[in-house]
Length: 67
Image (cartoon, rainbow, N blue to C red; front, side, top):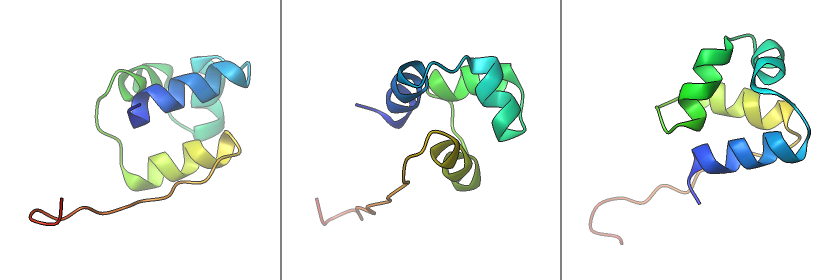
């Protein structure tokens, strides 16, 4: 499951609209829509979204040649 899909799923499970998540994250609803649609987001945005949804953002880097 992609990060975008996980954000959408967690937001829905929390009963939060895109507009409400955007308000809590201090961005716009269209930005949340784009993030949930797979557009890129900064690590800071992802961390803030995770915090609002009560989750942790854990990054596992995979470097080319280590796969």
